[in-house]
Image (cartoon, rainbow, N blue to C red; front, side, top):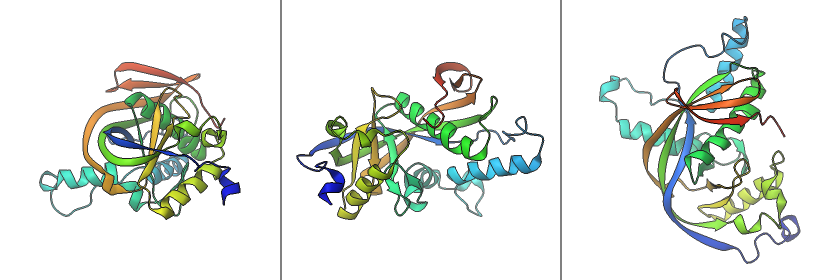
Length: 242
């Protein structure tokens, strides 16, 4: 086991974390076909939409009229509980358990989510050409936990920052999950000045609040990020699958 991690877990420090983390998720504000200008085939639209739905938290389902639904419960489920109920393969999970990902800032959450939207969801659906568009919402979520600090290990263990191969980090996540740790913090691979957080226990997360509404659109050279669909925030060079 030690040879697998090559001393990663030696002399690790904990970060006593008591702060808001940014969570960035898909949110369709208006009901529209986002893929009809990318292909003339309804079958292609359906394929792209199914891939998108697999990545999008579903709204609270209830026979009670919308105005009477427990908004707080729906917010909690979408922003906090979803990844713990719908397990997916990711940087720190092989798909056998859930991981909630957050960032130290809204900017870091944009860089991370833009990459995974473009290089993951859109590439898998075959819709990376200019015109692909999505609306997203960012939330602040309170985290109170003693987290494993991997930031001090990224230079000695570059596998932690690998852009494509997640086998090493998935092994790290599996061990921490098995041993019952609440989570970890490390450097962002998409915004090197920022930090990301992989949370393994939902109970250390509380108080989700809306932060901002963004739109991402693919152009010939970049992903254009706008605030409220209007003010230009960032242009992120196409990341692809590096």
